[in-house]
Image (cartoon, rainbow, N blue to C red; front, top):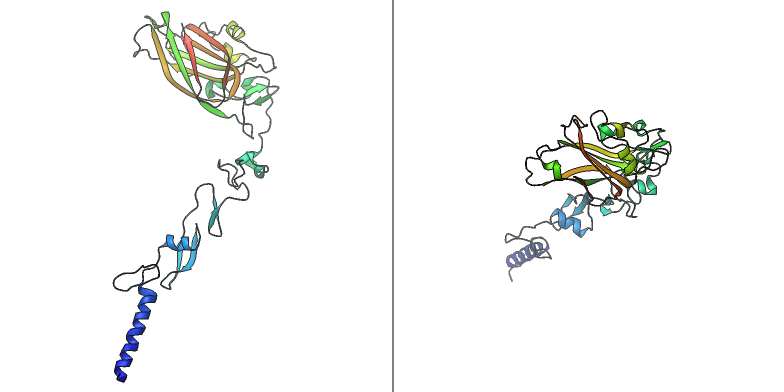
Length: 303
């Protein structure tokens, strides 16, 4: 073979070797033009077994690159570019279990010294009004054993754990006649007095709250009554037809509690802020009620 022909053959062979190394990768990536096609960022991260943040890697085309492997899902943290659980509860108020031990936030001993988990200083009281104004606030702590406390389940700080409940008002008989009530007041009354003695429906009705505007605040002003919840609702009977009218869609966020009295009043006068006006039309009371975090609905029936 002439020298020039041998030289040309060597050049062509070297070019073929170069194309095999780069233009036609081992996994078959490449294009008809013989150009090297590099991996995507996701492919580089997967090949390196990395889940998060940025890494330095060399792609199949021999290029040094810095690629972003993304973020970890909620509840996990990035360590050495790999998503995993924390070794301790890193945030004590995010409602997440970062370390995977089944305990969240203040329930985890890791948060024992966190300020957000510190119990509230005890507030002494003689009556519920020392703990808040239930008429204006609708819910407030109770006065129990000389201190302001949640009525039932509480956080580590002592704040009441609340649930959304439904309140269903049912009116029948003479109350759906020509003259109808315009306001209903619903109370959840704790069965415990501040001094530890018990309240029942007979004692509550005996206060004579359900008469007229001069008596409408006897329950609210009584130092021996603890109210878990209190609210006044304006009533519109325009959509009611027949001898019974139901108001099914009243909702309230209230503290979880057990063994309380469901107490309701219907009033002929319009609502004045959080109070009824006019004369009281009917009263309802039921003992032994509970709110435990389920889908609780409480029916108050007026006849």
